Image 1 (tube, rainbow, N blue to C red):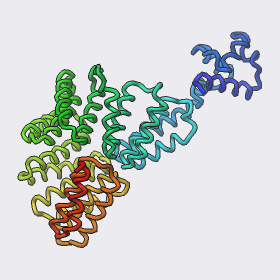
Image 2 (image 1 turned 180 degrees about the vertical axis):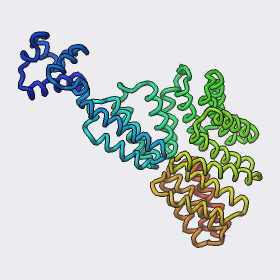
Image 3 (image 1 turned 60 degrees about the vertical axis):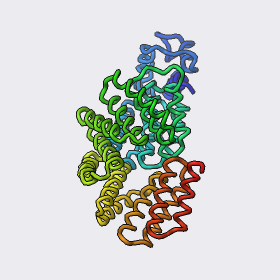
Image 4 (image 1 turned 90 degrees about the vertical axis):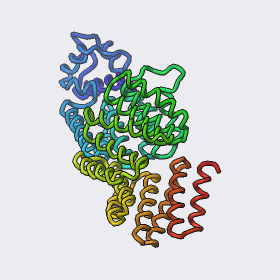
Length: 430
């Protein structure tokens, strides 16, 4: 049923409730045939006619247009604000519940834009809770059912979230296809800040897929576009993407240059939560390319940990920071401290994506091995292996199997180590 059909239906319903005929409602300003056409959805009333009908029916104009009273509209807008506030404060489960309750209420039926806002908010909250499968369903439903009503900016935002979810889930074909449908054609659309966000997701998917030549070429294009746009957001995204590509292609000094540029821009112009997340990623990159400076990166990560608490970050960001702190402590031979961080990680594991759970379990197993708790270490490593078995085959899972193999070898589990090595080779087609 179209919006105009709904308006006509509401006029008809209220008219009958008032005990009026079409002629009584119409006269003297309108003809009864005109009212009949409006009620059947065959004629769209002008704003002035709608105001007149609302006055004659003794109901609010808001109700005729949207199906809710002015008071109900205020309640809906307030509920949406509370849901967004919960999301902003990192209370992602609370946000998910609030958005779901809003959508379960029929009050949004005649409010397509607010309904779309709630559906998009629910998808993001669901993703933040770690439920990637459901988030993907919600985002695809939004694209399919709301495409005609969606503003270009929202269309791109949904594609950004969908590509990110597919990548986190390990479906790299879809993680690439979604953004390429928008920016991968023969004629590239003019770059905007929104499209730069989508480009960053596409670049991450190329890297994750192992298409490093394409990633390096596309990164150069994104950097050039960011320089032309000149906005802090586009420059931060472009330099961060270039840093990741540089790490993966073995250009360590280039990676450091790009990541420090991204941090400098974000520090000056960015919001605190995004800056904290970027600093955490920065430390992880430098742990990879400069592990000998682990003590300095520990200081960075401890600051990030504090900032994530202050900015009410979501559980996934907190979990990744704690894992990086555990890695630092292992590099510094501080196994007890690493164990403390891993206990915090284990408290956050429920509901997280399988690949992230696998990474955490393997790191916990490594930590337990360093603490001399071999039986517990084997148990965690086997649990991590089970998570990997449920995960899609990607470069990331190949690397995770390789990590598991090395740890098992180190704790004198040769048979299990060989099996993990074979799994790693199978992931890359060998």
